Length: 399
Image (tube, rainbow, N blue to C red; front, side, top):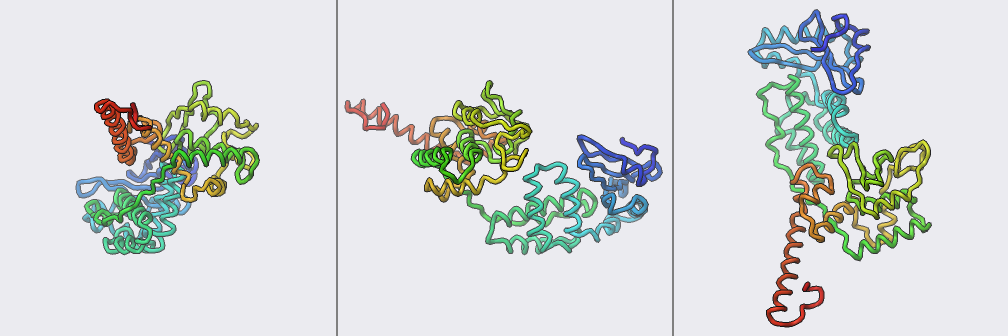
């Protein structure tokens, strides 16, 4: 159990606290159950924990800086007294002034900023800002009802994906509020009974001819045709040749590249650290890229020491030249999986190539695998039929 140096929580003792790897609660000597949670990000939040009605109760009191140690101690003592003397609904009254907007800020700082990846943080912040705070921001977390959640969800019906993400994130927020004692432990999360809208997946796979057209456009751009920098052209080629995510290529550092072993050793992809095998073609693309002193990024941007951040603009120019106006950058990854299936690779191998953590993610390509099986069955049957009837198989029918 971590203790404050000197034993007592004070402004000076709290400001000295820091942790490097994981958040830690430092407890006060004079008031048992009163503590301050310190995060690697530097954020510090006052907490209180005690027992009442046969169970443990913990609550978040506020952020250091917004709340003084003196006020936090006073609120902690009041909370402990209420839990020990009153029943649970009365003890929960302490939380009824915490609104969705207030707790959303706390959740972003205490949980999302510490435990989530940068892109996830951006997504969460956008959902809070655009959807949750404008509609439910002034509502106490204790009073969020199913009717309010249903209205929020229905109001976003024109964008099913956003509607479903907003409800999912609100569910996480209310679960976190319940864990911190801001909602009764037996409260039902009102988001759980909301029936989600159907979401149509966008699946676009490039044909052989479309890949050839894209290749010609990339060659022309690399030769000075304009529309994209050499770094952008290299990034698009690597996306097509590796099946990597855009963030994995744009965030690739030189110390993660091992051309001799033919590997990329990504320290932090969407699914954690992973190794990406490099084909000779992909390795050649990387080998031709210049290393810039002081810039650790394989795909450099215009600013000194920074990576390329915006690939969408050059992609829109190049795809238009190739007649691929409906193709997204992410469809290069889908097309990589589709080509692997057509060449006979199984779903487990494709999951490894794409860096999927769960088999269910790769299962979206099952229908393509079945099509490959049917095509193979047709080629085998055509070949056998030719032997039975003693005639040459039709062109492309196998043999």
